Amino acid sequence: MRLRSVLSRLSISTRLALWFGLSLLVLLSLFVAGLYVSVHMGLHQDLELRLREEAKAVQVHLRAHDEASPARTSSPSAHALRAAPGTFVRLLGPGGEVIQASPAFQSRPVLPADLPQPGTSSLQTRTWGETSAQSLYLPLDTGPQSASWLEVTKLQSPIHRQLHTLRWWLALGILGGVGVAMLVGYGLARRALRPVASLTAAAREMGARPTGSLPTEFGVEDELTDLAETFNALIERLRSALRRERRFRADAAHNMFTPLTAIQSELDVTLRKPRSESEYRETLHAVRQHTETLSSLLDELMTLSRIEARENQPPPSPVDVGARIRDRLRRVEARADAKEISVEWTGASTAQAPIDPEDLDLIADHLLDNALKYTPEGGTIQVHVGLEDGAVVVRVSDSGMGFDPEQSERLFDRFYRSNDAERSADGGGLGLSIVKAVAEQYGGAVRAESPGSGRGSTFYVRLPRHRE
Picture 1: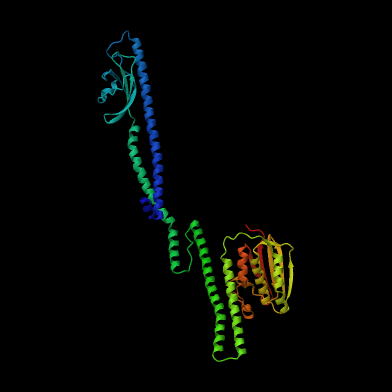
Picture 2 (picture 1 turned 180 degrees about the vertical axis):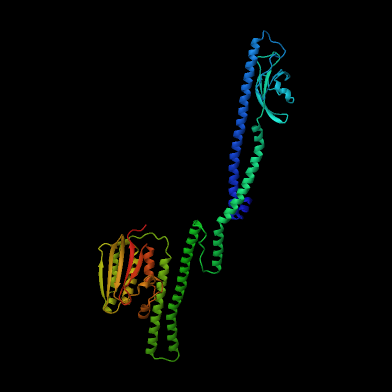
Protein backbone atom coordinates (compact mmCIF):
# COMPACT_ATOMS: atom_id res chain seq x y z
CA MET A 1 0.00 0.00 0.00
CA ARG A 2 2.85 2.38 0.82
CA LEU A 3 4.53 1.67 -2.52
CA ARG A 4 1.24 2.32 -4.32
CA SER A 5 0.80 5.65 -2.53
CA VAL A 6 4.35 6.65 -3.50
CA LEU A 7 3.77 5.67 -7.13
CA SER A 8 0.47 7.56 -7.23
CA ARG A 9 2.32 10.79 -6.41
CA LEU A 10 4.74 10.41 -9.32
CA SER A 11 4.13 12.10 -12.65
CA ILE A 12 2.69 10.16 -15.56
CA SER A 13 5.97 10.33 -17.50
CA THR A 14 7.92 8.97 -14.51
CA ARG A 15 5.45 6.12 -14.04
CA LEU A 16 5.54 5.32 -17.75
CA ALA A 17 9.35 5.26 -17.68
CA LEU A 18 9.36 3.00 -14.60
CA TRP A 19 6.83 0.58 -16.07
CA PHE A 20 8.69 0.56 -19.38
CA GLY A 21 12.03 -0.08 -17.64
CA LEU A 22 10.60 -2.82 -15.43
CA SER A 23 8.95 -4.55 -18.39
CA LEU A 24 12.15 -4.30 -20.45
CA LEU A 25 14.23 -5.60 -17.53
CA VAL A 26 11.98 -8.63 -17.05
CA LEU A 27 11.84 -9.44 -20.77
CA LEU A 28 15.58 -9.04 -21.35
CA SER A 29 16.43 -10.98 -18.19
CA LEU A 30 14.19 -13.88 -19.19
CA PHE A 31 15.54 -13.90 -22.74
CA VAL A 32 19.21 -13.65 -21.77
CA ALA A 33 18.84 -16.17 -18.93
CA GLY A 34 17.15 -18.63 -21.25
CA LEU A 35 19.78 -18.11 -23.92
CA TYR A 36 22.64 -18.44 -21.42
CA VAL A 37 21.24 -21.60 -19.83
CA SER A 38 20.59 -23.12 -23.25
CA VAL A 39 24.15 -22.46 -24.51
CA HIS A 40 25.71 -23.51 -21.20
CA MET A 41 23.81 -26.77 -21.07
CA GLY A 42 24.61 -27.41 -24.72
CA LEU A 43 28.34 -27.01 -24.07
CA HIS A 44 28.14 -29.33 -21.06
CA GLN A 45 26.24 -31.92 -23.04
CA ASP A 46 28.70 -31.68 -25.91
CA LEU A 47 31.65 -32.08 -23.50
CA GLU A 48 30.01 -35.06 -21.79
CA LEU A 49 29.34 -36.69 -25.16
CA ARG A 50 33.00 -36.32 -26.16
CA LEU A 51 34.13 -37.70 -22.81
CA ARG A 52 31.96 -40.77 -23.21
CA GLU A 53 33.16 -41.28 -26.80
CA GLU A 54 36.75 -41.03 -25.63
CA ALA A 55 36.06 -43.40 -22.72
CA LYS A 56 34.48 -45.87 -25.10
CA ALA A 57 37.50 -45.74 -27.39
CA VAL A 58 39.87 -46.31 -24.45
CA GLN A 59 37.80 -49.26 -23.26
CA VAL A 60 37.93 -50.79 -26.74
CA HIS A 61 41.69 -50.30 -26.75
CA LEU A 62 42.06 -51.92 -23.32
CA ARG A 63 39.81 -54.83 -24.24
CA ALA A 64 41.80 -55.48 -27.41
CA HIS A 65 45.07 -55.34 -25.47
CA ASP A 66 43.67 -57.62 -22.78
CA GLU A 67 42.64 -60.25 -25.31
CA ALA A 68 46.07 -60.12 -26.95
CA SER A 69 47.94 -60.66 -23.63
CA PRO A 70 48.47 -64.36 -22.52
CA ALA A 71 47.87 -63.41 -18.85
CA ARG A 72 46.98 -60.35 -16.76
CA THR A 73 49.71 -58.78 -14.71
CA SER A 74 49.66 -56.11 -12.06
CA SER A 75 52.07 -53.99 -14.03
CA PRO A 76 50.88 -51.35 -16.41
CA SER A 77 50.39 -52.25 -19.98
CA ALA A 78 53.34 -51.96 -22.22
CA HIS A 79 51.16 -49.96 -24.54
CA ALA A 80 50.66 -46.33 -23.51
CA LEU A 81 47.11 -45.11 -23.15
CA ARG A 82 45.98 -43.46 -26.34
CA ALA A 83 43.94 -40.21 -26.04
CA ALA A 84 42.90 -37.48 -28.37
CA PRO A 85 44.65 -34.12 -28.03
CA GLY A 86 43.25 -32.17 -25.05
CA THR A 87 42.05 -35.37 -23.38
CA PHE A 88 43.60 -36.83 -20.22
CA VAL A 89 43.10 -40.54 -19.45
CA ARG A 90 44.10 -42.44 -16.31
CA LEU A 91 43.64 -45.94 -14.95
CA LEU A 92 43.02 -45.80 -11.22
CA GLY A 93 43.18 -48.40 -8.53
CA PRO A 94 40.42 -49.13 -5.98
CA GLY A 95 41.74 -46.41 -3.67
CA GLY A 96 42.31 -43.81 -6.36
CA GLU A 97 46.00 -44.52 -6.87
CA VAL A 98 47.20 -43.92 -10.42
CA ILE A 99 48.01 -47.15 -12.26
CA GLN A 100 48.64 -45.62 -15.65
CA ALA A 101 48.19 -42.15 -17.18
CA SER A 102 48.30 -40.75 -20.66
CA PRO A 103 51.43 -38.77 -21.60
CA ALA A 104 49.48 -35.47 -21.58
CA PHE A 105 49.48 -35.52 -17.74
CA GLN A 106 53.21 -34.78 -17.70
CA SER A 107 52.65 -31.10 -18.56
CA ARG A 108 49.79 -30.55 -16.09
CA PRO A 109 49.59 -30.13 -12.33
CA VAL A 110 48.62 -33.05 -10.14
CA LEU A 111 44.93 -33.92 -10.40
CA PRO A 112 43.52 -35.63 -7.29
CA ALA A 113 41.09 -38.42 -7.97
CA ASP A 114 37.53 -38.12 -6.67
CA LEU A 115 36.07 -41.59 -7.05
CA PRO A 116 32.32 -42.26 -6.95
CA GLN A 117 30.60 -45.11 -5.15
CA PRO A 118 31.87 -48.56 -6.21
CA GLY A 119 30.13 -49.91 -9.31
CA THR A 120 28.75 -46.51 -10.39
CA SER A 121 29.84 -43.89 -12.88
CA SER A 122 29.88 -40.14 -12.41
CA LEU A 123 30.62 -36.91 -14.24
CA GLN A 124 32.24 -34.19 -12.18
CA THR A 125 33.20 -30.59 -12.84
CA ARG A 126 36.17 -29.31 -10.88
CA THR A 127 39.01 -26.87 -10.94
CA TRP A 128 42.33 -28.11 -12.29
CA GLY A 129 45.03 -25.59 -11.93
CA GLU A 130 43.59 -22.31 -13.15
CA THR A 131 40.95 -23.80 -15.45
CA SER A 132 37.81 -25.87 -15.14
CA ALA A 133 37.68 -29.45 -16.25
CA GLN A 134 35.19 -32.28 -16.40
CA SER A 135 36.11 -35.82 -15.41
CA LEU A 136 34.16 -38.97 -16.27
CA TYR A 137 34.67 -41.97 -13.94
CA LEU A 138 33.71 -45.43 -15.22
CA PRO A 139 34.24 -48.77 -13.44
CA LEU A 140 36.52 -51.15 -15.37
CA ASP A 141 35.74 -54.78 -16.18
CA THR A 142 38.88 -55.22 -18.29
CA GLY A 143 42.47 -53.97 -18.30
CA PRO A 144 45.24 -54.46 -15.74
CA GLN A 145 44.15 -56.46 -12.70
CA SER A 146 45.01 -53.66 -10.29
CA ALA A 147 43.03 -51.01 -12.27
CA SER A 148 39.43 -50.52 -11.11
CA TRP A 149 38.50 -47.15 -12.62
CA LEU A 150 38.85 -45.36 -15.91
CA GLU A 151 39.12 -41.58 -15.60
CA VAL A 152 38.71 -39.42 -18.71
CA THR A 153 39.21 -35.68 -18.24
CA LYS A 154 38.80 -32.77 -20.62
CA LEU A 155 39.43 -29.10 -20.05
CA GLN A 156 36.46 -26.87 -20.71
CA SER A 157 36.71 -25.10 -24.04
CA PRO A 158 37.67 -21.41 -24.17
CA ILE A 159 34.11 -20.67 -25.27
CA HIS A 160 32.84 -22.40 -22.16
CA ARG A 161 35.24 -20.47 -19.97
CA GLN A 162 34.39 -17.16 -21.64
CA LEU A 163 30.71 -17.91 -21.16
CA HIS A 164 31.14 -17.61 -17.39
CA THR A 165 32.68 -14.17 -17.85
CA LEU A 166 30.05 -13.24 -20.39
CA ARG A 167 27.20 -13.67 -17.92
CA TRP A 168 28.48 -10.79 -15.80
CA TRP A 169 28.83 -8.58 -18.84
CA LEU A 170 25.32 -9.58 -19.89
CA ALA A 171 23.98 -8.63 -16.46
CA LEU A 172 25.78 -5.27 -16.56
CA GLY A 173 24.63 -4.73 -20.15
CA ILE A 174 21.01 -5.44 -19.24
CA LEU A 175 21.10 -3.05 -16.28
CA GLY A 176 22.84 -0.35 -18.28
CA GLY A 177 20.59 -0.81 -21.30
CA VAL A 178 17.47 -0.69 -19.16
CA GLY A 179 18.73 2.46 -17.45
CA VAL A 180 19.38 4.17 -20.78
CA ALA A 181 16.04 2.96 -22.11
CA MET A 182 14.28 4.39 -19.04
CA LEU A 183 15.95 7.77 -19.55
CA VAL A 184 15.04 7.78 -23.24
CA GLY A 185 11.50 6.60 -22.42
CA TYR A 186 11.14 9.33 -19.82
CA GLY A 187 12.22 11.94 -22.35
CA LEU A 188 9.84 10.59 -24.99
CA ALA A 189 6.99 10.44 -22.48
CA ARG A 190 7.66 14.03 -21.44
CA ARG A 191 7.68 15.08 -25.06
CA ALA A 192 4.52 13.09 -25.85
CA LEU A 193 2.72 14.52 -22.80
CA ARG A 194 3.80 18.08 -23.49
CA PRO A 195 0.38 18.81 -25.08
CA VAL A 196 -1.22 17.73 -21.79
CA ALA A 197 0.77 20.41 -19.98
CA SER A 198 -0.39 22.95 -22.56
CA LEU A 199 -4.00 21.86 -22.13
CA THR A 200 -3.67 22.05 -18.34
CA ALA A 201 -2.19 25.55 -18.45
CA ALA A 202 -4.88 26.75 -20.87
CA ALA A 203 -7.63 25.20 -18.75
CA ARG A 204 -6.19 26.85 -15.62
CA GLU A 205 -6.26 30.24 -17.36
CA MET A 206 -9.82 29.61 -18.51
CA GLY A 207 -10.82 28.85 -14.91
CA ALA A 208 -9.77 32.32 -13.83
CA ARG A 209 -10.93 33.98 -17.05
CA PRO A 210 -13.74 32.03 -18.78
CA THR A 211 -12.79 32.99 -22.33
CA GLY A 212 -10.64 31.52 -25.05
CA SER A 213 -10.25 27.85 -25.92
CA LEU A 214 -7.86 24.95 -25.48
CA PRO A 215 -4.94 24.71 -27.94
CA THR A 216 -5.19 22.14 -30.71
CA GLU A 217 -1.94 22.73 -32.63
CA PHE A 218 0.61 20.26 -31.26
CA GLY A 219 2.51 19.55 -34.45
CA VAL A 220 0.74 16.21 -34.93
CA GLU A 221 -2.82 15.05 -35.36
CA ASP A 222 -3.37 12.53 -32.57
CA GLU A 223 -5.82 11.57 -29.81
CA LEU A 224 -4.92 14.65 -27.75
CA THR A 225 -5.90 16.89 -30.64
CA ASP A 226 -9.26 15.13 -30.86
CA LEU A 227 -9.63 15.46 -27.08
CA ALA A 228 -8.88 19.19 -27.19
CA GLU A 229 -11.33 19.76 -30.04
CA THR A 230 -14.00 17.78 -28.18
CA PHE A 231 -13.42 19.84 -25.04
CA ASN A 232 -13.54 23.06 -27.05
CA ALA A 233 -16.92 22.06 -28.46
CA LEU A 234 -18.11 21.15 -24.96
CA ILE A 235 -16.85 24.45 -23.56
CA GLU A 236 -18.58 26.38 -26.32
CA ARG A 237 -21.84 24.56 -25.59
CA LEU A 238 -21.44 25.39 -21.91
CA ARG A 239 -20.79 29.02 -22.73
CA SER A 240 -23.82 29.12 -24.97
CA ALA A 241 -25.88 27.57 -22.18
CA LEU A 242 -24.55 30.14 -19.71
CA ARG A 243 -25.31 32.96 -22.12
CA ARG A 244 -28.84 31.63 -22.62
CA GLU A 245 -29.24 31.25 -18.87
CA ARG A 246 -28.11 34.83 -18.24
CA ARG A 247 -30.40 36.09 -20.98
CA PHE A 248 -33.21 33.99 -19.55
CA ARG A 249 -32.75 35.46 -16.07
CA ALA A 250 -32.62 38.98 -17.46
CA ASP A 251 -35.69 38.45 -19.64
CA ALA A 252 -37.59 36.73 -16.85
CA ALA A 253 -36.79 39.56 -14.45
CA HIS A 254 -37.80 42.12 -17.08
CA ASN A 255 -41.06 40.38 -17.95
CA MET A 256 -42.01 40.01 -14.29
CA PHE A 257 -40.80 43.47 -13.35
CA THR A 258 -42.95 45.16 -16.00
CA PRO A 259 -46.39 44.09 -14.64
CA LEU A 260 -45.23 44.56 -11.05
CA THR A 261 -44.13 48.09 -11.85
CA ALA A 262 -47.45 48.75 -13.55
CA ILE A 263 -49.34 47.44 -10.51
CA GLN A 264 -47.27 49.58 -8.17
CA SER A 265 -47.79 52.66 -10.33
CA GLU A 266 -51.56 52.13 -10.49
CA LEU A 267 -51.77 51.73 -6.73
CA ASP A 268 -49.53 54.73 -6.01
CA VAL A 269 -51.55 57.01 -8.24
CA THR A 270 -54.85 55.78 -6.79
CA LEU A 271 -53.74 56.21 -3.17
CA ARG A 272 -52.52 59.79 -3.55
CA LYS A 273 -56.02 61.18 -3.05
CA PRO A 274 -59.56 59.95 -2.57
CA ARG A 275 -61.17 58.51 -5.71
CA SER A 276 -64.64 57.77 -6.82
CA GLU A 277 -66.02 54.25 -6.86
CA SER A 278 -65.70 54.04 -10.65
CA GLU A 279 -62.06 55.15 -10.48
CA TYR A 280 -61.31 52.55 -7.83
CA ARG A 281 -62.96 49.91 -9.99
CA GLU A 282 -60.94 51.00 -12.99
CA THR A 283 -57.71 50.79 -11.00
CA LEU A 284 -58.59 47.36 -9.63
CA HIS A 285 -59.43 46.18 -13.14
CA ALA A 286 -56.00 47.33 -14.39
CA VAL A 287 -54.27 45.69 -11.43
CA ARG A 288 -56.15 42.49 -12.16
CA GLN A 289 -55.00 42.50 -15.80
CA HIS A 290 -51.38 42.98 -14.78
CA THR A 291 -51.75 40.25 -12.16
CA GLU A 292 -53.15 37.88 -14.76
CA THR A 293 -50.22 38.66 -17.04
CA LEU A 294 -47.77 37.93 -14.24
CA SER A 295 -49.64 34.78 -13.24
CA SER A 296 -49.63 33.55 -16.84
CA LEU A 297 -45.89 34.19 -17.10
CA LEU A 298 -45.16 32.29 -13.89
CA ASP A 299 -47.40 29.42 -15.01
CA GLU A 300 -45.49 29.13 -18.30
CA LEU A 301 -42.17 29.22 -16.45
CA MET A 302 -43.28 26.42 -14.17
CA THR A 303 -44.55 24.40 -17.14
CA LEU A 304 -41.25 24.82 -19.00
CA SER A 305 -39.22 23.91 -15.91
CA ARG A 306 -41.36 20.83 -15.29
CA ILE A 307 -40.88 19.64 -18.88
CA GLU A 308 -37.11 20.16 -18.87
CA ALA A 309 -36.75 18.39 -15.51
CA ARG A 310 -38.16 15.10 -16.77
CA GLU A 311 -35.78 12.16 -16.90
CA ASN A 312 -36.15 8.50 -17.89
CA GLN A 313 -39.87 8.72 -18.54
CA PRO A 314 -41.38 5.50 -19.94
CA PRO A 315 -42.79 5.89 -23.46
CA PRO A 316 -46.56 6.54 -23.35
CA SER A 317 -49.20 4.80 -25.43
CA PRO A 318 -49.81 6.07 -28.98
CA VAL A 319 -52.31 8.93 -29.33
CA ASP A 320 -54.35 9.94 -32.38
CA VAL A 321 -52.62 13.26 -33.02
CA GLY A 322 -55.08 14.45 -35.64
CA ALA A 323 -58.19 13.82 -33.50
CA ARG A 324 -56.58 15.45 -30.47
CA ILE A 325 -55.57 18.60 -32.34
CA ARG A 326 -58.99 18.91 -33.97
CA ASP A 327 -60.50 18.83 -30.48
CA ARG A 328 -58.17 21.66 -29.37
CA LEU A 329 -59.04 23.54 -32.55
CA ARG A 330 -62.72 23.62 -31.62
CA ARG A 331 -61.81 25.36 -28.37
CA VAL A 332 -60.37 28.40 -30.18
CA GLU A 333 -63.10 28.77 -32.79
CA ALA A 334 -64.77 31.51 -30.74
CA ARG A 335 -61.56 33.55 -30.65
CA ALA A 336 -61.06 33.05 -34.37
CA ASP A 337 -64.65 34.11 -35.14
CA ALA A 338 -64.24 37.22 -32.99
CA LYS A 339 -61.35 38.32 -35.20
CA GLU A 340 -63.01 37.04 -38.39
CA ILE A 341 -60.11 34.65 -38.95
CA SER A 342 -60.75 31.64 -41.20
CA VAL A 343 -59.41 28.34 -39.81
CA GLU A 344 -58.84 25.53 -42.32
CA TRP A 345 -58.16 21.92 -41.31
CA THR A 346 -56.54 19.10 -43.29
CA GLY A 347 -55.18 15.93 -41.82
CA ALA A 348 -54.51 12.21 -42.10
CA SER A 349 -57.19 9.79 -40.99
CA THR A 350 -54.80 7.86 -38.74
CA ALA A 351 -51.75 9.68 -37.46
CA GLN A 352 -50.66 8.20 -34.15
CA ALA A 353 -47.57 8.98 -32.09
CA PRO A 354 -46.44 7.95 -28.58
CA ILE A 355 -46.99 11.18 -26.64
CA ASP A 356 -48.81 12.13 -23.46
CA PRO A 357 -52.20 13.72 -24.35
CA GLU A 358 -51.58 16.69 -22.06
CA ASP A 359 -48.22 17.37 -23.71
CA LEU A 360 -49.87 17.19 -27.12
CA ASP A 361 -52.47 19.70 -25.86
CA LEU A 362 -49.62 22.05 -24.88
CA ILE A 363 -48.17 21.86 -28.42
CA ALA A 364 -51.56 22.49 -30.05
CA ASP A 365 -52.64 25.28 -27.68
CA HIS A 366 -49.40 27.26 -27.98
CA LEU A 367 -49.19 26.90 -31.76
CA LEU A 368 -52.83 27.96 -32.20
CA ASP A 369 -52.48 30.78 -29.67
CA ASN A 370 -49.37 32.02 -31.47
CA ALA A 371 -51.18 31.96 -34.84
CA LEU A 372 -54.28 33.75 -33.51
CA LYS A 373 -52.18 36.33 -31.70
CA TYR A 374 -50.15 37.43 -34.73
CA THR A 375 -52.76 37.03 -37.49
CA PRO A 376 -54.71 40.22 -38.27
CA GLU A 377 -58.49 40.36 -38.63
CA GLY A 378 -59.74 38.66 -41.75
CA GLY A 379 -56.65 36.47 -41.99
CA THR A 380 -56.37 32.73 -42.50
CA ILE A 381 -54.94 29.91 -40.38
CA GLN A 382 -54.26 26.46 -41.83
CA VAL A 383 -53.74 23.42 -39.61
CA HIS A 384 -52.46 20.17 -41.10
CA VAL A 385 -51.53 16.82 -39.55
CA GLY A 386 -49.83 14.27 -41.81
CA LEU A 387 -47.35 11.40 -42.02
CA GLU A 388 -43.86 11.91 -43.32
CA ASP A 389 -40.87 9.49 -43.21
CA GLY A 390 -42.10 7.51 -40.24
CA ALA A 391 -43.14 10.57 -38.24
CA VAL A 392 -46.28 12.61 -37.55
CA VAL A 393 -45.89 16.22 -38.71
CA VAL A 394 -48.09 19.00 -37.32
CA ARG A 395 -48.09 22.12 -39.47
CA VAL A 396 -49.70 25.43 -38.48
CA SER A 397 -49.60 28.21 -41.11
CA ASP A 398 -50.94 31.75 -40.80
CA SER A 399 -51.18 34.89 -42.90
CA GLY A 400 -49.84 37.06 -40.09
CA MET A 401 -46.85 39.32 -39.70
CA GLY A 402 -44.19 36.67 -40.42
CA PHE A 403 -40.52 37.20 -39.65
CA ASP A 404 -37.14 37.50 -41.31
CA PRO A 405 -35.68 34.08 -42.30
CA GLU A 406 -32.52 34.65 -40.25
CA GLN A 407 -34.68 34.84 -37.12
CA SER A 408 -36.15 31.35 -37.55
CA GLU A 409 -33.65 29.66 -35.20
CA ARG A 410 -34.14 32.16 -32.37
CA LEU A 411 -37.92 32.08 -32.37
CA PHE A 412 -37.88 29.04 -30.09
CA ASP A 413 -35.56 30.66 -27.53
CA ARG A 414 -37.10 31.58 -24.21
CA PHE A 415 -38.52 35.13 -24.05
CA TYR A 416 -37.42 35.89 -27.61
CA ARG A 417 -39.79 37.80 -29.86
CA SER A 418 -39.17 39.58 -33.12
CA ASN A 419 -39.40 43.35 -33.23
CA ASP A 420 -42.79 43.25 -34.98
CA ALA A 421 -44.14 40.80 -32.39
CA GLU A 422 -42.80 42.93 -29.55
CA ARG A 423 -44.77 45.92 -30.77
CA SER A 424 -48.02 44.23 -31.73
CA ALA A 425 -48.90 41.63 -29.10
CA ASP A 426 -48.63 40.79 -25.43
CA GLY A 427 -47.21 37.60 -23.95
CA GLY A 428 -44.25 36.26 -22.10
CA GLY A 429 -42.42 34.79 -25.10
CA LEU A 430 -42.37 31.24 -23.72
CA GLY A 431 -45.04 29.54 -25.86
CA LEU A 432 -42.73 28.36 -28.66
CA SER A 433 -40.05 27.40 -26.12
CA ILE A 434 -42.57 25.09 -24.46
CA VAL A 435 -43.47 23.58 -27.85
CA LYS A 436 -39.80 22.88 -28.57
CA ALA A 437 -39.16 21.41 -25.11
CA VAL A 438 -42.14 19.04 -25.39
CA ALA A 439 -41.24 17.90 -28.91
CA GLU A 440 -37.61 17.20 -27.95
CA GLN A 441 -38.75 15.25 -24.89
CA TYR A 442 -40.31 12.73 -27.29
CA GLY A 443 -37.41 12.67 -29.75
CA GLY A 444 -39.04 15.16 -32.10
CA ALA A 445 -38.00 18.49 -33.59
CA VAL A 446 -39.44 21.89 -34.46
CA ARG A 447 -38.76 24.48 -37.12
CA ALA A 448 -40.24 27.69 -38.46
CA GLU A 449 -40.42 29.17 -41.97
CA SER A 450 -41.45 32.53 -43.35
CA PRO A 451 -40.97 34.31 -46.70
CA GLY A 452 -40.32 37.51 -44.80
CA SER A 453 -41.84 40.17 -42.59
CA GLY A 454 -45.56 40.69 -43.22
CA ARG A 455 -45.91 37.57 -45.39
CA GLY A 456 -47.09 34.95 -42.90
CA SER A 457 -45.30 32.08 -41.20
CA THR A 458 -45.44 28.30 -40.86
CA PHE A 459 -44.46 26.24 -37.82
CA TYR A 460 -43.67 22.53 -37.99
CA VAL A 461 -43.58 19.98 -35.17
CA ARG A 462 -42.24 16.53 -35.99
CA LEU A 463 -43.09 13.62 -33.64
CA PRO A 464 -41.63 10.11 -34.25
CA ARG A 465 -44.22 7.35 -34.57
CA HIS A 466 -41.94 4.85 -32.83
CA ARG A 467 -39.73 5.57 -29.88
CA GLU A 468 -37.23 3.27 -28.17
